[in-house]
Image (cartoon, rainbow, N blue to C red; front, side):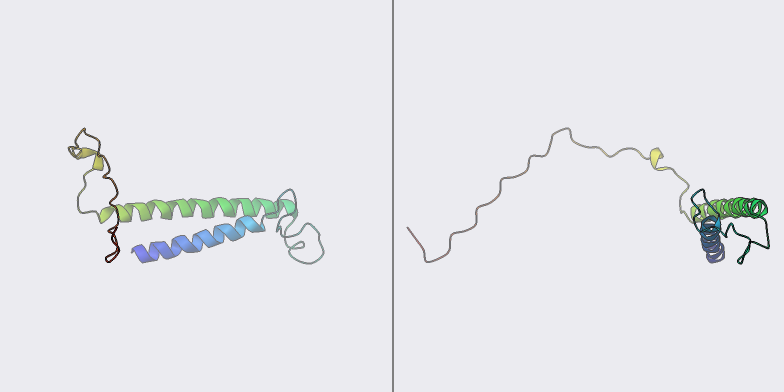
Length: 114
């Protein structure tokens, strides 16, 4: 079940990226073209294409959010205990700060004496 939802989630993520990249921004972007010659200029007018892409983006985004929620719910079902980490008592700690020990000196090499 998780694998199927995850696959759908990844496909929606890629589709959402592609639909957003196709939309024409103020600077031109990767838009589907503003000219009527070639491309999809003859298929849809600029206004109709923008409306279609906006609706498509909204639909894909809603489906993406739904699969995100489904994946979160499925991930939560596998927990062994339904307790919160806040329900646990904190561990007892000592109030004395730990003092680091002094570094040890390396031993003198053998055969060299003073």
